Amino acid sequence: MGMMGSGMMMGSMGEGSGMMAMPGHDVMQRAMLLAPGRILENGKALELTPDQVEQIEALAENDADGRAASMELAMAAQQELKDLFDADPPDTAAVRAAAEKAMTMHAGMHAQRIAAAAAIRSILSPAQLEQVKLVRGCAMGNKGSGMTMPRGEATPKDAHQQHHPPDSGDGS
Image: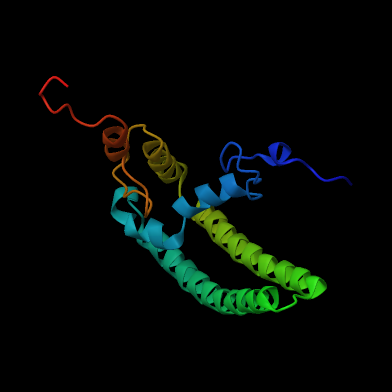
């Protein structure tokens, strides 16, 4: 297989970046909205039943335990990769093996998060899932749902003001 030019690898990571989008990136974004903690934070807006809260709390506990263990292993794999990469001279085969191990650990953490979100989908009603979709739409500039925005994302109003600052009134 020949080498690809950087222009052939463009994905949703930005035009001209030469980077492909991570496989499952769109699913991962949707899964973040269905994270057990986020759903519990928004329990009132979603009108969760006591049974749903109990199921999601159990899922959240199991998810947190699994993520903590996975994170520890992933950090060790990352350190091993860093050490091998920084060696003078680096052992290319060892660096590649360590990189594959670190990436596999990272992919496993994403897969765990996506699986937890899929479990949440089976707990929520169609109407509740629609509420969650409205939050995603809100993040893209559509009408909101009363749920909190995902951590680290601006509200549509913030985004609008960033691109269209208020008129200073001085005519300039």
